[in-house]
Image (spheres, rainbow, N blue to C red):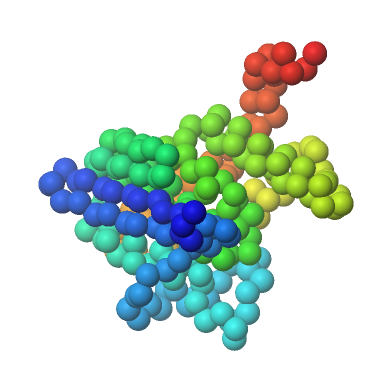
Length: 232
């Protein structure tokens, strides 16, 4: 077993150019492992539009960890616009996913990985999803995966003798926090943007964050018949 878990995102644009990102994560913790990077831009400083609910201290943590890890990726999309077409390949250990879509939609899942694994105390609550990454997921797929993650977490808490919450209130609370961070991080990204690609990639993620708690109960009711053999 290797010490790192790798996710590759490769983008092929209509002009024939390509960009590839090798995302390396610590196998044990799923923590993002940054490459050697040049001096970080000012918009990555923690004090620059720091999220309202961010618990990090500027004195101890000079840069926003998400911004620092995303800055190099963001710079690669400066010359494109959100609705330019791109063919995206996501390569993980088990398989390869591919889709032709807009750049903003193709960048969203990569941004989601960075946000969940960079050490943000709020967004790392979504980190377990990264090991079972599903790019270009539908809303129904996202809800099923999020509810499953939440209930696995409760099972693990129960196994450790901690209180467990078997409803969805805790999940909805997490998503309320994620929405707040998304909103504040969008303000930060405005400082990085020479176009709208990076911001709209975040907007796509935020749209799902808003819809998951609203639609979760409805989806679970719809798929209940699928579990008929388990509910007897």
